[in-house]
Amino acid sequence: MTVTYRPGSIALLAVPGLALATTDEDMARRVWPRLAAGDAADEALQELTRAGFAATPPFAMVDLTGPRARVLVRGEQLQAEVDTGSTTVRWDGAGVSTWAERTFDRPARIRIAAGATAGDPLPLRAGIVRCGEVVVEPDPAPGAPAAARPAPVVEPDRLITAAPITAAPITAAPIATPPAAAPVTNAPTVGTVITDKPPAAPDLAQTRTDDPDPGFDHLFESTIMRSIEDAAVREIAEDASAHDSMEQGPAPIEPIGPVPTAADPAGPPGDRPGDELGDHDGHTVAAVDLDALREQTPATEPLGAPVPPAPAHQPRLELSTGEVITLDRDVVIGRRPQVDRVQDGPVPAVVTVPSPQQDVSRTHLRVALAGEQVLATDLHSMNGTVLIGADGRTVALDGGAPQPLADGDALDLGDGITVTLRLT
Image (cartoon, one colour):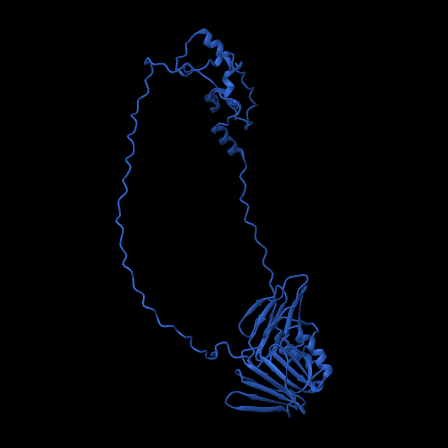
């Protein structure tokens, strides 16, 4: 938006999208930090009316931050004039205990008059000045047509003659024929005598280190050199020398004692099934032993599944809009709620409620769970919050003071918005 003013005697505060004129300079100094920090018009109104409507000074506000332009006037010292493009609307706040507010769809010009003026109009982007008149012109709507520009001069097209394109003859590249595969010569079978001997290999005995036990060479990371003769398959001769070599193998490992089993019933040893199994190596558990163990193991009842504890009832908030919110953390409710930075703990849940008449402030109410108690705090809202108890009592909440709630208590925020606490 564009703001221009004529010097005068009232204070004018301007930030992008918002202009506020008031006759109380002390109030202007208190409101300015909130506007400079980016607070919206509702926060500025809360500061203006903090001491009550009786102590609120005359003011006029132009708010262009929303989809519609808002113009508010309090008192008869200030007059508003709005040019809608088709008509001009003028009014002031005389005879109104709060202020007179009207909304417009992108007016062409808004003027606030406050007494005598001096000098020429001066522009103001942001800051505080003394003025006698202020004019606010909203920016054009995003879809507004732009100013017509002169059409560019188009030079006449030059005649371009296309040159004939002669296609070059395409010659197929010769396909290379792969060379014939070399004939495969079958390897000679076992027992075939090869007449042409390959070149003799160097004597391996000169470079080879004999190992006293070649049978374990494969356990080491080295190449084992063996002759073709070692690969021949032979029958083991049944002679005394073969038996002697087999008897010199590693000594058998002494077995661990047999697995203890249940005592056998009385009876002759020859009647036990285990005697039919032959030699026992001490490690194997026979099937008959398992059956005996199962018969002597006392039967146990299956343990029942653990019963999960019954979940505790979580407090919840029931809104008149039909929304139900579980109160597992703080809840901030308003028309456009904002949450300050949280140092410790979870970030409060933000709940937006409709308010066509704007009776509900942007950041109106906080509901918090403090131990086993639920507390409601009015966040210095414009129209306040009324507690309607389950027993029928009615209490107006003090701004900033926590109020304990009981099951069934309802909070009236205005504009038909209520919040009811349910503990069961």
